Length: 148
Image (cartoon, rainbow, N blue to C red; front, side, top):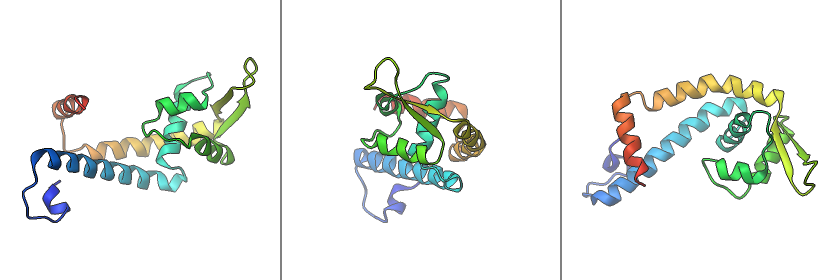
């Protein structure tokens, strides 16, 4: 990915600026690619993230705070995300028996089934995004990104 080509400039961009622009362009490509892969399932990237978190909870329900803490993309409208998943029948929401102020969210069988269908296409999508990098390069990239 050539930053100067993409933003159509002939000027030399200072390395710090170029790096940050590059990161933004890569992020946009990753989000766009995942969004396109999820479109046939009628699920947004954020909804997919919530479903994966809930599946990872196993038999334990999650609350809105847990979901918000664990989401890759932090957002303030987690309630609305859950509402949309509820309408689609992918999650259940109930009041906690021991703390009536707490709302518990779990993934439904339908949600698990749909997530299972999406797993294969998402793995292929992930693979295609990093197919030009070997294991050593991926580890090096992760090490560098950890410095952020």
